[in-house]
Image 1 (cartoon, rainbow, N blue to C red):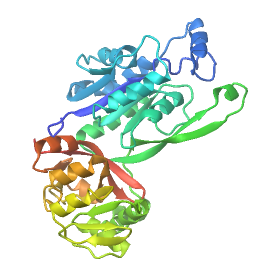
Image 2 (image 1 turned 90 degrees about the vertical axis):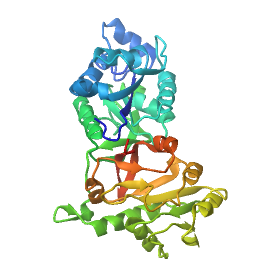
Image 3 (image 1 turned 30 degrees about the vertical axis):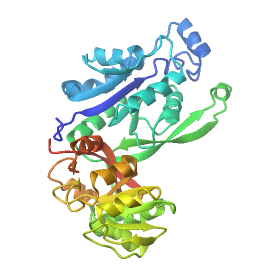
Image 4 (image 1 turned 45 degrees about the vertical axis):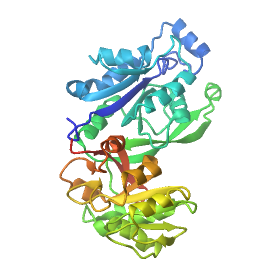
Amino acid sequence: MQTSGKRLRVGLLMNPCAGIGGPAGLKGSDGPAVQARARAQGIESQVCRRVVMALQPLQAALGEIHWVTCSGAMGESALKDLGVEDGEVVYVAPSVTKGLDTQQATRALQAAKLDLLLFAGGDGTARDVLDAAAADQTILGIPCGVKMHSGVFANHPLAVAEIIQDMMAGRLLSAVLGEVRDIDEVAFRTGRVLAKFYGELQIPAALSYIQSTKVGGRESEGLAQQEIAADFVESMQPQVTYFMGSGQTVAAIMAALGLPNTLLGVDVICHSAVLQEDVTSLDLLRWTTQGPCRIVVTVIGGQGHVFGRGNQQFSPEVIRAVGLPAIDVVATKTKLEGLQRPYVIVDTGDQDLDQTLSGVHRIRTGYNDAVLMRWGTRG
């Protein structure tokens, strides 16, 4: 049950042709000609069976998830096999699907504001998803293809259910970038393996601590804040104005930059220089009209608020002007694991905005390290 009062939103996208060329010894399944040769041998797709296998352990909780999918063999059929009759269909698939359908379906599913997008296929499917995926969309592949060189798939279909169960329970999951790779099937059929890197997708993974932040097997709060600061400073862009919120973790970033900090206020910085100290919400709103801006906030220990406690300078108008993709939340894993609830709270004073901000989002927790955690309300 989602203690934040909002069901997990999971999208399901299936490539009905994935893996069909494997049993036929065709070294892949890309292209209608290869798929026709496989079917001529009496080989049928195993994608639906593998998706059902992956989600079967969730049987008792399937109704607690809001499913968004595609019609027929691209998703709806598998959900019905699992007893889910109320899946929201946002893409109507043709009888014969192509890579373009995967791309169009990815865009349609993302528009439904998913916490997690599951896709079933192989490396070719991963490439099509990559072509249409937003950088902040969390995605996980159910392995169903012949070629599995990409690092965006669960190790086994059954691992998918474990990850979803962790998300439903509010347990921390690392947010990592998985590589999308694919090989040249024509070259592969001649015995040559030519793998190419195409890009990265954000995926959930088992929680892991960065080794250097451990002291006696536990995370050191001070070292973790230093690593967060180092990671954030490396990510900063010179043309962006940053609104630095209150709290010790944000203060660690300011210290790493060698800048004075208003511990219980909001400072505006750019080019590693303070533009304005201890600002008001009206000040911030004016800065949003000057160029690209980002909000940097931490989580209040114990209570778990991201917005609404101690940083009311980030008014609904300011947050809307900046936009959700430009909000950076920084917090140590120790702080997140010590929260009273398995999610962080958004309480902007605007219910519509709170709903917009709700969902599973990335929180920076160390150097090159982040977790996925639900943002929600008390509702």
